[in-house]
Image 1 (spheres, rainbow, N blue to C red):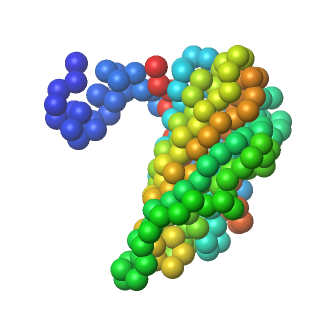
Image 2: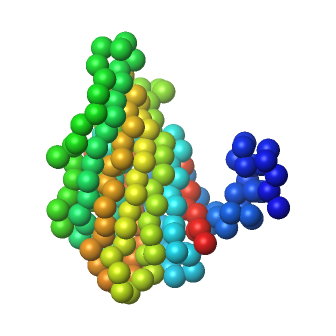
Length: 197
């Protein structure tokens, strides 16, 4: 049983046991053109969580993207309808606000979906966050996706993105997920996949 200090400080024992979240796979980038999860996504769990830790791009002002597969990763081309909006604040307090990003959403698009901001590729530039994929093993319903990311972006902005949130419009089971950058490679960073009961 979790005690208050476990919950308050996020100790892994509490997360892994009492809350039904299991770490299934960890991929570490090293100048990687893509990071792909091609096993372990099935009907075992109702929710799959992808955690992004310090995603650092090779190119400046580039974004992490995702796409889904229904054939084990042979093709990443599932139709998606998404929304994309951000809140931002510049380091020098010169600019701040919120906006809907019409250029990064999809309307039944089969291409990869942008997530997060235009990541700054200086030494300390990176993106971290989470993506939740709901019931990918279903052969009855569409698959809903929620993404939340925080980035240090081009122009020294702190940005919070609720990017690529929407649904994958397929009743086929999704069994693979791929992450790429919009240009260049994933220079470094970690993506973890969890299953949640």
